Length: 392
Image 1 (cartoon, rainbow, N blue to C red):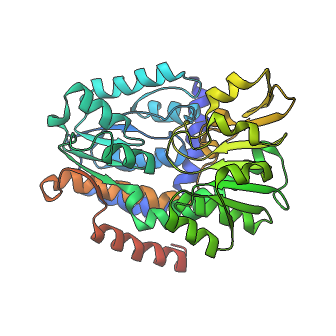
Image 2: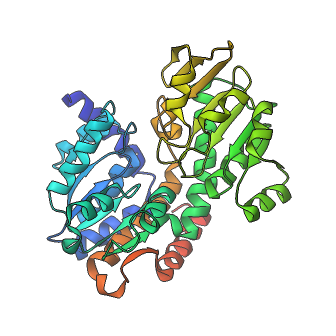
């Protein structure tokens, strides 16, 4: 990566930093108190400018950072800027899945004390390697990672993991509003299609799905919801959305957006139900919600339409369009911006305060996945309301 790339990344980070007052306060306090002195934090998280400000904050508190981005969402100029400041970071935006796996292994090779995880990739690697006994604790950012910790890794994680996604602040501020806003903005920017009047099916009515549905409808989209959980489906119906089983909704759809954190929610067996021209996109963390392998296997030809936009021609002549190879398109699509600065100031303050609790008082936390402590949520909520009221 060139010096020009580092300069560009540094300028982008500077703009973001200037609009994150919550982390600025914490960075000053961390520089004084040094809660992470002597500790190494192993990180796997989307590497973009807002993440860079979080890493600066942790480093100010004495942490040594060794990390990698998530597959397909790394922003190379940001990595270059952080490397120029002495952080050990692995990975590039164009890494293959195999190289991404190697990047994760490199982070684990550094023998971290604390994990800052996204998708539970590092936690799974620690368990597989038999390293769990040396880990003080960590955080997990996503719904998908929380599923892994409580299912695949249940009972095998002997250290505390604070699940940031369990916080009501993240659910409301980041998932509902920021993911909803950024997903709709990214859909418009990548596809250049109009939202008003377009028929959307949102798969999943968790916090992210709620946000996507809300912002699509606010801009004039016609929105239907497919949700297997009866209570969430009931909520979606009373919120005014058409709710039905997915096979009933797909022939109606002009665009389908998955938002569940679970694999195979749009399986290959249902692709024949889609009308020609349907656009498919995913905003869940892992690129497994849309069966992209089946899409490629069923297609007789495929064509790159634009950066982050690919067309698949099916045997009957229908065209299906896929955004960002089925990856989280608000971060892996063309010219990604991700969630709003303010929402990530809030979300990354949750990260910083949770990691501080792990560093200073791990004995106060039980082993395994657990919510962010209530006192942290309430302190941050009070401060965020003050920032929204006063602007500072």
